[in-house]
Length: 269
Image (cartoon, rainbow, N blue to C red; front, top):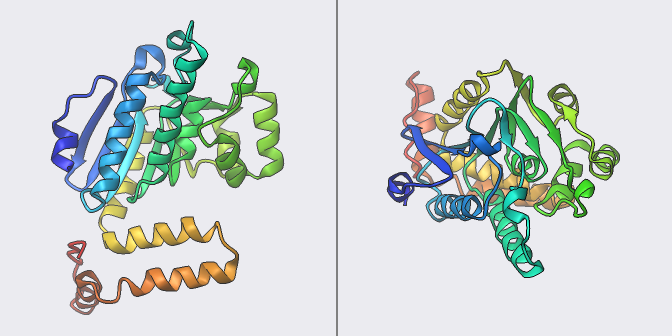
């Protein structure tokens, strides 16, 4: 599966492995602010479906956009112009499936928000485990200004990220906010000068990829699922996830490496 992802020629994405254990997915329609088309949505479904089907192939995934102007402007409204209700619904169902596929990414998914993230673009950024952004990035969920509402997780992921009351203001007004606001609200973890965000995210991805991959995936799963439970149930889930690691080769390698004062060589087994 990993070779299939890298061998396929995508029309709207650039899919590369800047390092053997890191997959980089770049939205590649800079002339249209990397806006979603039906084709891009289908290609994202293929990529993230492949990552989920082979969770050991990559230890970290990085999602970004081409150019410096936009990460993603949301759905391409030129393509939607003139769509029938049936065509609109069919396309949106693809977007819903794509959002679920991105959220289900078993490896850590890091967003490199290189520019504006509006509407579905912000919803896509919110599907990442965490993100760094350019200091000049702008954000908005503008759907209510267009006669619709967020439908790719925005009404669920944004309140869970920045809190209910602030999320209601953002969503119900459709007003853009700055990268500095996004940082202050905890929506992004770090701001970088323009042109430097991808490098910073790749540096963090490299550090994650150097850790035990089974441990990283189990920890991610425990955090994600535990936040949907009460604390006592989450503690039980954490212990179940923990015990899956006791019999692994990587656990023994971690102990050996520590005692031998060397860097561990984790195999994901």
